Length: 457
Image (cartoon, one colour):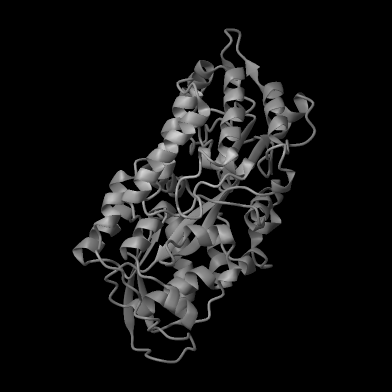
């Protein structure tokens, strides 16, 4: 099961994405020329070749004792398969530190990150090695990885990372509050979500919010723009890599829906309620205490509810979708951890073996997924009978969302995800009533994004 330290790590990384100018500068300064693992020097993984003893370093961000032990258990499986390779794992490492190590020539052999937004910069600058030749030499089938996941682990024709477990988002709903409001099933459309939110909302005598049926205010827990626009099938970037938010009608539709529900509550009331929401990763989480009837959240919440000993009677479902796009129901947003070989790795052949094992070996993937409560990132692992998470109907929702062909993500970009930062600033002004012309505001975001994307190239 995931611990709060891991989730804090993941969200701290994502928060850094919101101010990604620093990350962009760091990524583009890492190296002036692209590198590769040497044209697939590890060769096909037949078990033959140089088996001289070697020790490689592996940095990752997991920090709780349970998580560290869980990673160690999977590394023991790797050592059993490759007894001549010893892995020295270093936990609680950050992207900033690995960037510094790459610049200083002291990079680890393998690095894992919680922040896929950095992939574009790492691939385009050559900070992480292009794995394409090794993938081809070892005949690794990328078809076992869903398209959305493939998209956030590669950039510009270079696959410099592989996915290492994922976070998948859906709807959590309070069954007790649903029954009291006469609601018999979770909403499937956004109009149903808005109607249910109104029925489930309870006000205090002074008119303030006691129980929010749903929290439409962006920035509250996992209510983020990237988790919202997927319900309309929004595409953040065009095929040429330019910004698409002013052209794709999904963004205007999503913002119109969101603002309509904000206005029904009252922006000031929502801002006050948001300010009083306890820490997302504490046992006082508003959903776990019954003060939030529905929310968008990741699969890890199932473990938090259990570990926090919350008494909330809840269910999970895919996020509702636009009324005009019923074919999207069952899909959602996915993001996750990435792992690759930094420039300067002293043992790239052995490093590739570790990367491939952790990301494509079914036993390795299911073992770690079960241990920390994340979604496996390969289809064989998702369908493996040894994946015990699949036996929990509440968690199985997220496995189904992950496998849905319409599930999407925020694509990698050379600007380190600045397009999300710019959109987030716009969305905050929009929900507080500071944007009088929605379409003009979206076009302005396009101009900002295109400028940032050009700088990131």
